[in-house]
Amino acid sequence: MDKNNYKESERRRKAYERNRKIKLRQQRRNRTKRFLILTFILYLFVILAIFFAFSISLKSCEKEEPQRDINIQHQDDKVETIKKSDLYFDGICYLPISVINKLTDIKVTGDKDNINFIIEENSEYANFNVGSKLAEINSNAIELSSEAKIVNGELYLPLDFFTTYMTGLTIKIDDKKDVYVLSAESTPQFIFKEPENTTPVDENGVTDITDSPMDFLLDLSSYEEYMNPKDRDAYLILVSEENPLTSDYAPDDLTGSIYTRSDRDTRMLRKYACLALEAFLKEAEANGIKNVTVTSAYRSYDYQNQLFVQEVAIRGSEEEAAKHVNPPGISEHQTGLAVDMHNMSAASTAFGNTKEGKWLEENAHKFGFILRYPSDKTKITGINYEPWHFRYVGRYHATKMHELDMCLEEYIEYINQ
Image (cartoon, rainbow, N blue to C red; front, side):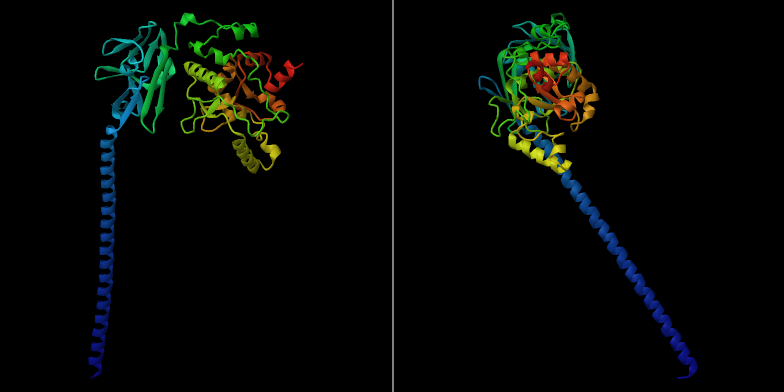
């Protein structure tokens, strides 16, 4: 092979190699592109499959929910079954007037726009504007939590209307079993009476205040014995290092508060404290103080010990921890007479500056409560300011403490002189 032929052959070989490498690179790119496209298609298919499955599940839930039933058990043990979808509107539970009519004689008059609900036995009435939250009870204007409705020609009202604005009527709800138990101890009444029935408070003396009707917006006469107990000294208990409670002390009349915050187990108080608190918060609502709920009440000795140990770990010493959480045996919560309540996500001294906190502090004595740890008494109580912590002592002593501007420690010393 001559020299020229060799060079030509070498040139062709190199050109062939270059072309081969270019083709290989192109093939690799094509394979990668196909892989990415297939991966994307597969990913898209998975997303669509998940979305489709979720849609089917959602539709299934929507179809199943109306089939759930609410069993309404009346005081004569008769059970009435109503579809849950017929009682819940936009997440709000309603009751038809016909259900309440089985407990007492109710007359319903009016038209499709305005309905009167009359308790015939005592001639009390309520007036509702259909499709509106505005209503009237015995000439007193109120605002419902949700609008009044006409469903299949019948008046439906939010469940909390009956629990908030009526007495003599008991409605217990077991959400887990979907059972509502309705009963009436006497003729149901509205807690609002005619405005002229209220009596102003005599501000000139403690005795007049405790023994005379209070200036409540609501008729709280059924709660009077609990706010102002006949045995005035029965609840005047001072728990301290000098007067500790034993580890086995537990009240025998603990009662669940209907104002327990929805994300908590039912909070318990002694019976008189619990019912006085119920009157306190009902009147608060009537005065525009909304969403105040009970976050803590009775605590056992063992539970208080757990809280104190946790606080010691946070604060670094028992001395510092005791400024925020009482050690076991000297916590008022163990008496069943103390309650923590507010409308914030967590207890905070900022609550004392809100209109709700101020109203509760200014009016607590009327219902038999005191603000237990005021901001100006920390050196005496040994506990930091807690605007959410109230203590039941009964109206007589609560009003005296309010008038004398004394905390419980000062007052006990004062009356023992």
